[in-house]
Image (cartoon, rainbow, N blue to C red; front, side, top):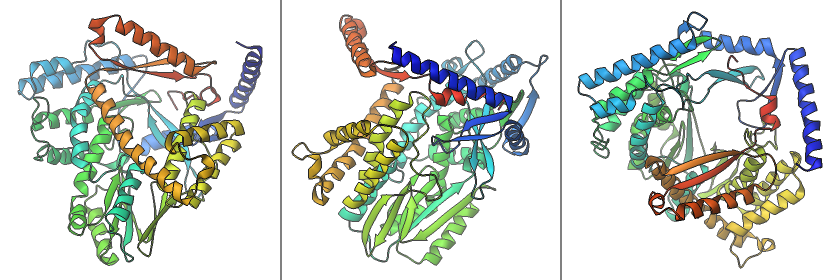
Length: 538
């Protein structure tokens, strides 16, 4: 290691040790906030633990199962869960709902790498500046139900994404591309057109499992997807999904709990179930929209659509939709010619669509996103993402320039050099700006060319995502992670790929597998990780 880096490492080690000593001495807690921004909360440890305990005890989404102690260890509780799951698989086999090969595939009693996930809490502030806590689940990849949940996700996700593609958006860029096409190519936007947005609150905490399964059943019998489930019937799928929902266990503060309502945000199959539920919920609204050639798009639990009829009728329709939601799930709506959706301001100015990036005035400006592993790499990627979003969101060249300056100021404010900013700005233009133009040639006319290129990038994203999902499904993708400390990451990756290719090309049999490898770096010594480690009981 170069002497300068060694000196810096030792200096920062002393700072972190000093901060940790002060935190322990004064019984303080330092933790990142729930908004996933690069901000931290500093508060009394006992107060935060009390809020976390109260959240668990007062929640009607979790069922207490058992205390974990010397007589009832976590390993014993896990063994009981695994045995009970295998009994359920055997029952499904005896009832001829699944074949013998599926029973053996899902059986977990002989697996040794199974662990129970745990819950921890992140702080956030409400509108009145009160500190609240939000639960987060640790990884489910080693949980008892992960193999079954992942298998069901592999079957159902491609079917649902094809089924719902006309009414959902992949991300903000996909949404803005569709809205721009509706406005400029189809010319359906009228001077009197209103925009409507909705957001469904508390869905992940309060939706009942019976509602999720009922929506799944409706989806499975749809003629677009029926009988396409890898030799499993719709009844098999429902039975297996019910088993997943029934067996979402976790630990907190030496106690075992089960999720009885809602779903974990980091378990892919439950996120898919939620989208199926919302697709079923929006059916009556879609009938009204399709009849009148209106625009509609939903992204998870938020939605946007155009409206030309009376707002009173739309408000009554919203009231009816609220009644179809489970108790304690709130539908928040807004109607007007100017709305905010997916961090964008969307306006109808006399029949002309105007859009730009939205910055919440109540939030601290110039914040970078939280990045746990290798922040510099993640922030470098976010710089390009933010510029892409600016071009896709901003309908005018002037708004794009304002957002570009905001992005540059964000990085400069967070300690990145002007050279870093200028280099990555040149990289962005070299990729998306036509070669015959120079950066200084950017104006209102050439900006339209840039924006078309950025909308084309949405289609490229979709293709890459589909290819990645296909590789994952066919078990042809290998993800490798290595620890990064210092040096040239790009040179290491290039050398690795060359060595990999040479080894594969020398083995014709192995080459026929057509494996794709993805190399990722982890920087395990960032202050984000060292200062805000999350303990299992918090």
